[in-house]
Length: 445
View 1 (cartoon, rainbow, N blue to C red):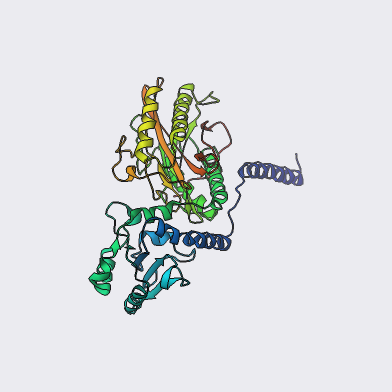
View 2 (cartoon, rainbow, N blue to C red):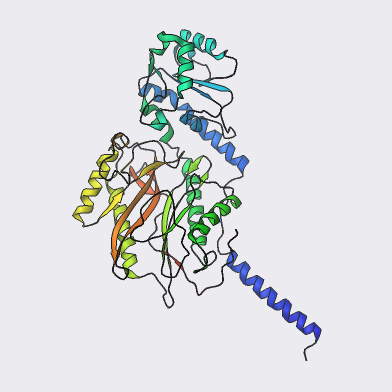
C-alpha cells in the first residue's frame, strides 16, 4: 500500500505535468503588443498634424481657395473621422472648419480655422473671415456618388446657405478628389505600425485555426467569430466588421455573413475579417483545412486551388500602377487571366482610415468587369490597397468547383513604384489536426 504522502506527491506531479503542458501550448503564440493607448494617441496626433499640413497644397492642386466643413454632434461629415484628434469621439455642438491656403489675409492664421458653437455666433464670424480672405472657390462635401466627398448633411447645407447667403453659396464647388486624396494618402511612418498590426492578424489566425481553439464535431464557425471578438479585446484592438468564418462549398460566395456550421474533419474553412487600431484598419482572407484521420496535409486538389489564387495575386500586382484607373487594372488583369486559363473574380479596394477606404476600386462582386464612377478614378500613389479576389478551381474528390478566396493588404513602395504585400501572402493552408491535444478554449454561451 502506498502511503498517504506518496499519493499526494503523485497527484501533485500529475497536476504539475498537466499545467506545464497547457502552459507550453499557450506559450506557442507570442503577440507583440502595440504601444499603450496613451502612446498611440500621441503618435496618431503627430500623424494628423503632418497630414493636415499638406491640405494647403492639396487645395492649390485641385484649384480651390478653401475647404469648408460643418457638422454637428452625431451628424459628422465623413472627412471628420480623418481630421479629428485621437481622443475626440465625435464633433462638439456645431463644429465648423475652414481650411485655407495660408495666403493673403489668412496667412499665419490657424489652419483650419475652427469654431465650436451652439449659439449661431459662428456664422457672422465666418462671414467676416470670408470677406477678409475673399476666396473665389470654396470646396464643400456635396458629391452624390462618393462618400468621402459627400458628407455634408442636408440640414447643415441648408443652415450654411441661409447663414452665408446666395453670394457666398455661388462660390461653393464640389471637388471630390480633394477629400479622396486627403483620406487615402498614407505617411511613411505609418507603415511600421501597419506591419505590426498585420503580424497580430496572422498570429490570431494561426491560433484560431488550430486545435488550441477548434474541436471538430463540436466547435462551430459562429463560435470562432466570437472567439476573435473576445481575443481582440485582450489585445486592445477592435474591428470594423464582425469576423466571418465559413465552411467553403460550391455555393459559397463572398458576402457580409459567414456560416453557422459545426466544423468537421475534411472541411475547408475561410475567414474574412480585419482589426482596427491606431486609426488604421486591416482586411484579410485566409483558409484552413481540417485534417481527416490519417492525413498529414491538405489534398493536392485544394493546394492547386490556392496556388491558382496566388497566381491571380501575382497578375494583379504586376499590372497595377499608379495613374491607371481601377477599371483599367481590372480589364488588364482579366485579359491576362484569360490567356492563362484562370477563371475568377477581382474586387480590390483601398484600405487605411477605413476598411473600405477612399479611392479607386478594382471590381465589385456584383460588377465583375466594369465599375461606374469609383472604378473610373485614378489609382493614387502612397496608398494601401486590399488585394481581394478568388479563383475558381474544380475539386474532383468533392465534385465541386470552389471559389478559393484570398485577401492581403499591400502598400506603395516608392523605390519600385509598385504595391507590395505588407506581411506576405498565404501560400499554405492552416491545418487543424484533431489528433492533437484537446483545445484549451471552450465555447462560452
